[in-house]
Image (tube, rainbow, N blue to C red):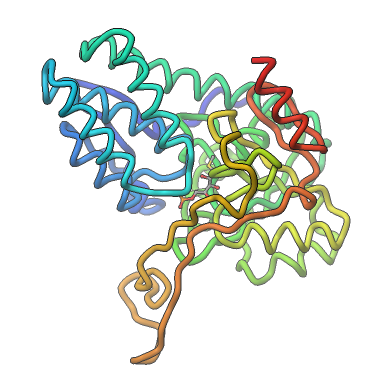
Length: 342
Ligand code: MRU
């Protein structure tokens, strides 16, 4: 099959506004929303209208560009807008990376709205190009006929386009390989069931959704050739924070000797963070666990906790596919070497 690019947009700039596909409504409604001020963009990141590490980094960069229009020439107000955007979600380092890059641009060129918008556009374009490179690097690790298990949504919806983990699958399919995908539903917000399955099916890629609890036995039964997931932050030693449930999949893949790959651009690598224990893990509202859609499933008085991410230790990871190349163990040395080479 031929694949050029996904048939939807995740985040883009149009008519003085940031436009986002509202991921809360997928797969039933494909609605695009325009945001014209930084408060709206910050709210859209916090309430997960837009989600996925690279996508929120790109969205925050456009938020800074909006702030430069809202507060012409007022660097202090733009810096306050940066703080507002940075306070939305703590785990995905791409958010802070995107904001830091916009601040560096402002330090160099001043609060020029056109220059800041060009920088945000460049961040978006580079993310798409980086996903394509990463996809091609990773696709070399998949064989014609493979079945790939993935968790959460690390697709075009989680990036500016093409995707990280799903970018690897898209690239393999574009190379002519037949790939089947098993997508964990990914409770509590169902990014796998709602988003991964939607975007793969839209591209004609064979996808089957399983309950999260089925993943270990599906791996044990030999139904999967490789696991590919995305990442929200990769520490200097190669430990990876990703959507809650990823760690369990990695343990099961290791137990059954199935390769476990992580696909993430270098904007997800945080060399200032020595290991996974130092990665801040977002705790989201208990209501996301206690309720499914609007319906409470817990008895009155029962507590719920909702850590949104977990950390997979590097020894469970076979390789990390990045936009700059493939990183193999030992990850501490090889991540630093690749970072320095670029
Ligand atoms: O809470 P979310 O939906 O923003 O979490 C997203 C993930 O965990 C993705 O797997 C990760 O951001 C990688 S996206 C290319």
